[in-house]
Length: 210
Image (tube, rainbow, N blue to C red; front, side):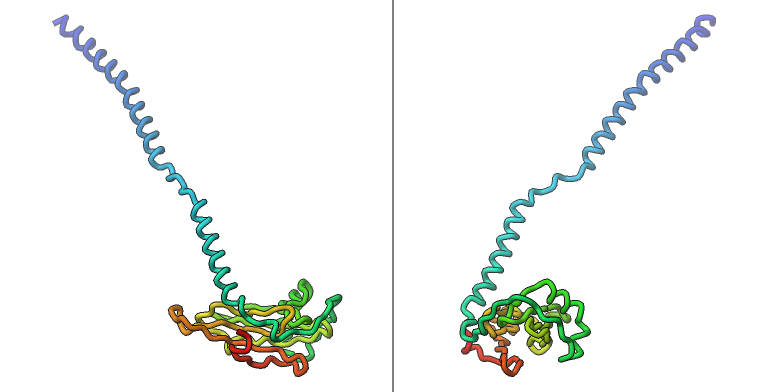
């Protein structure tokens, strides 16, 4: 009886000791599990985008080359503008058309920061006016007068290969190169020639500048 009384506390002590020894093992497994979980949650390695960027850059260059090919054979030299050495700009004059005053900020910024880029005397400013639409003006550096460019809804198209093509030494202004659809093979042109004497743009046929 006395032996049983001694054995019971001894067995309880042994069981308690085993439990204490097992607990660190459990913690060790938990720590390992956390490490594995963290490792599995690490973001995947970012793919190398170097080749992708090269491809995108190449595509951009190819697109530019295609646009250059479209415009390379335009005969801007058939409509030369007078030789002019640009030295200074006259003060802007909004009196010719009061509607231009609504765009005074764009006009003033372009006029102040640029030099002539069309038909010898004119600084152009072109901006968006809606879906597939652009509009613009040109400012004469000699007297500051402002004229509208042949852009806007009348010369816009949904499928445009290029728009607003012009040259410093020419009076030819190609407003748009259009297609009837993306799949259409043929293109048509909205092109004009600036009449310096009359101060107007006059429509010109494709055969005259191609």
